[in-house]
Structures are given as C-alpha cells and as structure tokens.
Length: 80
Image (tube, rainbow, N blue to C red; front, top):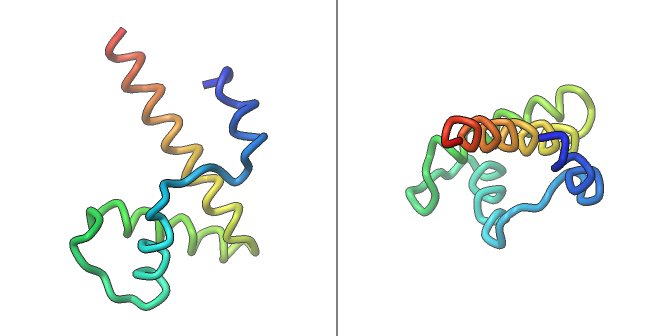
C-alpha cells in the first residue's frame, strides 16, 4: 500500500470510474436505483457525508479511496 501512496497523492482525492457522476446524482437526489450496487452507493455516500461533517467532501472521497486501497491490498496479500 505504501507503493500506491505517490499515485494516491498525485490524484488526490482519487480517480473514480466514468459513471461515478451517476452515483453522485443518486446520492444528491436520494433516488437510488439498481444501476449500481446499492451497498457501494451507500458506502460512498457515508464517506462523502463523513467528509462533509469534517468540512470537505474531498476528504471523504479520499478516505473512501484509501479504504478501497486497503481492501485491495488485503485481497492481494491473501492471494499471495
């Protein structure tokens, strides 16, 4: 995960998929649908709300992406 840190910092708060804006629209309108997995959308919303609570939605997205990096690192470590 330390090796990914320069990329994380270079693209702060992170890189998201092209259809990320669809999920953000669902979160803003509170109109959820099955276009994306609901658990993923709600997890993203939780981190965005957490970031807003601390004063920055970008910080929330950075925390969300950092958690994703940790999950990926754990999965790769388990595979090794």
